[in-house]
Structures are given as structure tokens and as C-alpha cells.
Length: 264
Image (cartoon, rainbow, N blue to C red; front, side):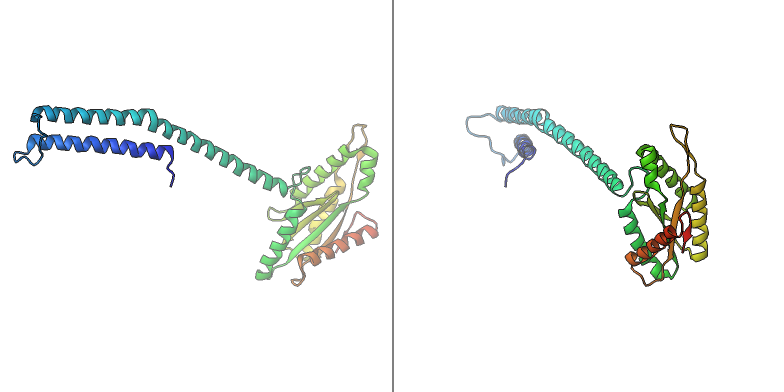
């Protein structure tokens, strides 16, 4: 097994301290032991030998101090800096991951939830409300003749229209409703615990609010838009895809009946 530099330096440091400690204990043993258990080598006087032992102990302690200041401490500081940099990088990557996840579920133009979020949320709502036996309402909205807005006034104006409609939907829905842009000029609202009558009333308020929006273009043209809305209330048997398709059929029914209307 290979040791890290700091581990090897620590072992050397501990060996030096241990060696100095043993020499000190031996020296004190010679001084304090009257029975001579701690023998003095031949040719040495006790006082002179104890002095040499204490000198050697001092050398070992000085070496340990040198190791600690000039090798172990710099290694600790380097590892601390590396650990701090690693934590910063981890936090940055975590924040970036959350940002990317948020971006993956959000429509960049309107700031609303996107189709991916809507699909997941619809399935989750149906799973939860199946347990409590409560209704779930769904509305699909499509702006009428929106292609003409882009073709006549440009995509910048079209983007402004989409943003205004998105703000209108936010203002008229509840905090626990799922409001999403499905793509292009199509939006959707999942309205939990909302049955037929309440869902129709909400859809009519949204339709009238969108029709009341007025945008002024750079050429001082006052632009108005309308929306067609298809509604469905979950029958507690449908899958999320079947439920969506039923609301979508009602949307196309509203289009066929003349647009700017709610069809349930």
C-alpha cells in the first residue's frame, strides 16, 4: 500500500517524537534510578552520558519541529486549499445542474413550464387524484390565426403576444394549477379539483381576458388576438394521453365552430 506524502511525513514526525521521548525517559531513569536498572555504557560518566542523551533528544525534537513547519504544515495547507477548491467546484456544479434542470423544464420565451414538465405533472396529478377521488380539469388553448400575426408583423411582435398571453394565464389561474406552453401558440392548464361548471367559467374568463389584450406595434397598429379553448374533465379511467387527446379534440371542435370560443 502506497502512502500519501502527508502520511509519510506524519509517520516520520511521530517516529522522531517517539525517539526523543524514549531518550528522555532513559536519561531520567539514569538520574532517578538508584538501583542501576538504567545502565551507563562503559567509558561514560553518568552526568556526561545523560547530557548526550538530552542533546540527542533535543536534536530529534528540533528535527520533528523542522518536519512539522516545513513539510507537514505546507502539505496540510495544500490539501486544505485543494479541499476548498473542490467544495467550490462541487457547489458550482450543483448550482449549474439545478439551473440546467430548471431550464430543461421551462419555456425560455415566456418563463412558463414547458411540454416536458406538463406531461410529467399531468401524469402525477392523475395518479394522486385517483386516490382521493377528486376531479381534474384540463384545458388546451390555441391562439387564433397566430401565423398571420408573425407573417404580417414579424416574429418580435408574435413573441410579445405570447408573453402577454402567458402573463394573462398566470394572473387568472391558481397557484397549484399547472400552466404550460406546449409549443408554438399552444398552451395548456391542468386545473386540479375543478369540475365541469367551474372549469367552463375559468376558461371563459381566460378567453375574454385574451380577447381584451391590445398590443401596439412599432407602426402604431393596435393588434388584438383571440384564443380557442378545448376542455375536458378526467373520467378517472383515462390515461394521461387519452385525457389530453380528448381535450385536444374539443379544441379542434372550437376551431371548426368559428374560433374565439370554449368547447367542452
